[in-house]
Structure formats: structure tokens, C-alpha cells
Image (cartoon, one colour):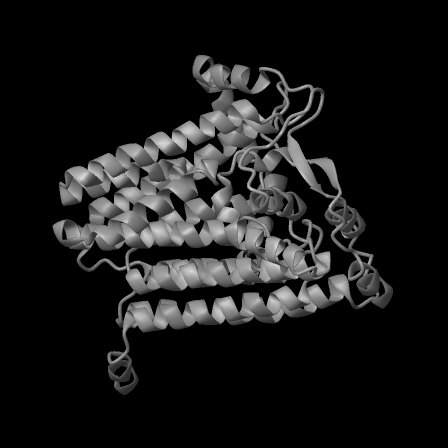
Length: 457
């Protein structure tokens, strides 16, 4: 009881902000440990950031090619050289490799390269990486140093946005635990989209929860931050589109006409960008109307799609892959932890979720919790829908292309539905379990990464 009374002097915001600082610091250290371009699709995200640095918002599509753009030939050579580690865990980083990588320079000569998967994302979210690449090129840094600056700025920016989000509204320990699993930590230390997208989603959900508490007293600045963050999330993560409902929920709580106009503008912008990007982006030269035809097929034959979905989620191999790649398959999905790690981490997350649930005062928040939980489930279904349209052959019996890390967004929706951090015995137990998750993840990641990239047997 004495220990509990001492915790009552702490603020929930202090605990979650301190936690975010430690997580961000680990991601900062990770940028110095993990070799360049070892996150899935990171090279394409780097190209997208480079195009933003050149002032280009849309991809180009030459006749007979997939969508892409022109990049510096030195950057393309840098990317090609580092691709030799992809899918080859037996290959280690040697001293000669580090010397070779450091010698790539900017050439001012452009070559065309494809990156169609990034054409659907509103590129402003790549701003930290773009600043790093542009600054490196202007200061005549090597491409490797420019990349490392871009990756560092992305990790630091994501950390700062997360801290701001938690200063606005302190989420429960399950949210913290989801940020502390190896897959989230690994992606947050890369130059890809994931770290910034996750941070902006946290900002959107935290501002939403705070606005629904303040109602009419919500300041205009908070409402503006909320609207901007919703627009950014919905235009960089298609399965986060249900978040467009939140601005209209905010209007119902505030009853301000300006909030309604912001909600309408946000939805119009997000849907407009998505439709325009889908029209302008060509994933492959042979791409025709297959995606639109399959989308029409979902409405005409909903039971067929339901059958595909059932086959997919009940496939034992896919279930294992989803769980493993949600918790952490590092590198280009070629670096696994021991099997006992996934079992232990799953139990820790489940225990954290159980203790994060608070049944006190649920009548006051059940509507918000229900809305967020519903969005989480909708986002979960949209993942399968999007990958069915983009990756799955017409005659397939299951939906292909899904990775476990995609489920972080619906998981965060569900976690926020559990409410905020409070200084109660139950919440403190959940917070203690988060600390165990973070320490367990960090302790497991370091030897796995060292063995994967540097230490041979």
C-alpha cells in the first residue's frame, strides 16, 4: 500500500511520456546498429522521400512500365548494392562492405526506377526523410551518410510526435506494449513509412479522445491538429480509412459548424487523393481492370469473398505467419526469433490487455470505446480486402500478400478503446507488464540483429 500511495503522486502523462522517451531512445540506438535498407520495401519508401525532396508529389508512368520516377544514379546504385542481403540471412556485413557503401556519391545524373507501391501515399508524411536526403545532397555528403541522416530524422520525428500525442492524452499500457514489440521497434528505426504513420495515428487517436472529453471547450488548435493527423493517416494507410468517421463524431460532441466543415474537407481530401492516386498509379505494365473487376465481384458475389476470407484466417500456416510477423520477423522477413519468444511475448501482450481493461466508469466512455473497437474490426477487414484487390490472383483459394505488421493499426484502435492510463492497482499491473514486454523485446532483439548481420557461425 505504501508503494501504491507513492505512485499516486505520479501523473499518468508522466509515465507514458517517460515510456515513449525510452522507446524512442531504443529506436535511436537501433539506427546505428541495423545496416541500411533492411526493412521490407524500405528502398521504395526512400525513393518516394527523394521524389518529395525534388518537389514531386505524383509518380510517373512511362508507356509499358510500372509507376516510378527519376532518382540520382548514385542513390540507385547504393540501393542495388544493398539489395544483396535481402532474403539471405547467411550473408553478413563485412568491413569491406561498409567501406564500399560509404563510397557511393551523388552524381546529379538521373535514372528511372519503379516504386508503384508508394504511389498511393500522400507524400508529405515522408518530410523527415526528404529533409535528410535533400540536406545530404546539398552538403555533398555521401549517399550513405545522407540515408543515415534521413533515417535518424524519421525516427526522431516519430518519437517527438508520439510524445506530443501522449502529452495530450495518456493511453493505457496496452498501447505502450504494442509500441514495444520487436516488429514495431524495428520498423520505427527504419527510413520507411511505418514509424511516422504509427506516430501520426497515435496523435489522431489521442487528440480524438481528449476532444471528446473537452467537448465544446476543445481549443481550435487541438481540433486543427486532429483534422490534419486524420488526413495524413487516411492517405498513407488505406486500411485506416475508417478513421475518417472520427471528425464527424467530434462534430457531434462539439456541435461547432467549423468542425463539421473540417470533417467534410478532411474526407473529401482523403478520398479524392486516394481515388486520384489509384487512377494515376500502375502497379505493373499488364495491369488492367482486374482490381476494379474484383472489387465489383465483392459486391456481386459477397459469399465468394467471405469464403476466401474464411479460408485465409483458418489456414494454420497463415495464422502462424500473421502472429510471428506481427510480433517480429525482422529484416526482409528473413530473421526470426526462437519459437519460445513468440509464445512468451503473446502471453505478455494478452496479460497486459487483460489488466488494461478497467470496468469502472465504463458507462461514461462506452460509446467512444465502441466506436474505436468498431473501427479496429473494420480496419482488420479492409486489410484482407485491399490485399485481395492488389495481390491475390483471380482463381486463388486464399488471400495473399498479408503481413502481420499490417495489423498494428487495428490493434491500436482496439487498444485505445480500453481507455486511458490511470494510477490504479490494475493499471499499474498493466504498466509493469508493458515494462516487461519492452525489456524482453529489447533484450531479444540485440543478439538476433547482431547474429543476423554481423556475427557468423
